Every structure is written in structure tokens, then in C-alpha cells.
Length: 277
Ligand SMILES: [Zn+2]
Ligand SMILES: [Zn+2]
Ligand SMILES: [Zn+2]
Image (cartoon, rainbow, N blue to C red; front, top):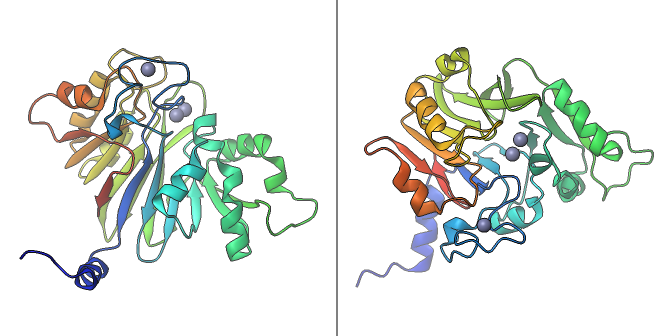
């Protein structure tokens, strides 16, 4: 029969590449389902229509990196089984990308150190405004969260990656997307919140394998790319595969997939989805 003994399966697993991305959340700021909403999508039984707030976990052999700490971070970390985190990158300081910061405390305690957090100086200042106690603890208590802020405006090296912060338009708040390169190749980039991408950024992303892009909803929005706008940006960049994230409850996963023009390498991401690099 085709049954494989469990230990052989495990052995095969350990031979697989450990470099992967996991979407911890793919929802817009209120998540899906939305509190108090009984629309069809919020009542959907398709697990892909259950979206926690947007965040990405990057695992490589050397490092475990996180982009943003959503208000759902505790649930996400438990669900994904995150055991270790080496650093967190922040795209911007909106609540849906930040409010889980306090739950980094277990990683500070485990490693007995402050968690390095990387972002634009302005974003770090905003984060400090929300979590002052994590920046300047009066007394260092090992079970409390403590961060080590690292301001980045130029490309930097972390965990074997060459990471380039790229500014995008997202309302009035300073917002980054991040491009990850390794061994001279453009592996992936993450732009969860974006209304407009400059020609310069689009040029920088050309030749990339995976583009993760804000694709909020069908109807235009003042601070996020709509579905059609995101398709346009995706086509300009021309990644091997593009994934839309930061999705609202206006359409189901299936409906959103059907809206993608035929033959384009674009998919709608969902919680728990993994990309092997
Ligand atoms: Zn957001
Ligand atoms: Zn709804
Ligand atoms: Zn935002």
C-alpha cells in the first residue's frame, strides 16, 4: 500500500528546505469576520475567509524574522508554533500592524535580551509613543517586553538576507515595504499597505520571484490599492508570482480569485499559506 511510516515522513520533512514564508494573517485592519457583521463572507465556512490581521513570518535556516506584530499576534504565534524570533521589521505604525508588540515578551524572556526592531526612524518614534515602557524600562524585568530599536533607511543585512526598505504611499503615515534579496537574486517583497507605488520602486522590484501586495477590495479606497489597481501594479512589476493580502470582507476568497484576469500569475493569499523559497 502507499502508506509511508511516520518516521520516514519525518526524515523526508527534515531534508526539505527550511526557507519559507508563512502568512500569519491576510486580513484588513478589522480582520474577517468583522465584529458585528453578518454578511455572507463573515459567515462563510471557507477557512480562507477567516483572516487575522496582516503579518508575515520568514523562516530560514539561520533566522526567524517577523514583519509586523498584529493585534492577533498571540493567536498567530501559537497557531504557527513560533518558537524563536530573532527580529521584527515594521512596515508602519498603524494599530493593525503594531498592537501585538507586547506579546514579544516571551521571546525576550527566552533569550534574555531586547528584541531588535527595524523600521524608519519616524515609525520607531510612533511605536515608542504607544509602547514607551518597552523602550526605556525603569527597571529591567526579564518577563517584560523590551525592544532594541534600529532605524533603517538604507539596505541592511539580516539573517542572511539583504533587505531594502522601500517607501510607498499609504495615506499620510510613513510606510515601508521590504525587498528581500539573497545570493544576487530578488526573492520576495512585502507591501501589505500601499496606495501607490512609485516608478522607482517598481523598477527596483523587476525580476523578483514573489511579490506580496496590498489588494484590499474591489471598490477603490483612499489609502489602499483596490483589486484592479493592484493587478496593474503586479503586471508592471512582473513577478513570477504575486499574492494579494490585507483583504476585506466585501468578497469571499473564491470571488476574489475569480476576479483575477485569466492567465495572470496572481493569487489571493490566505492565513497559514506558505511559500517555499
Ligand atoms: Zn494595515
Ligand atoms: Zn462582513
Ligand atoms: Zn496601514
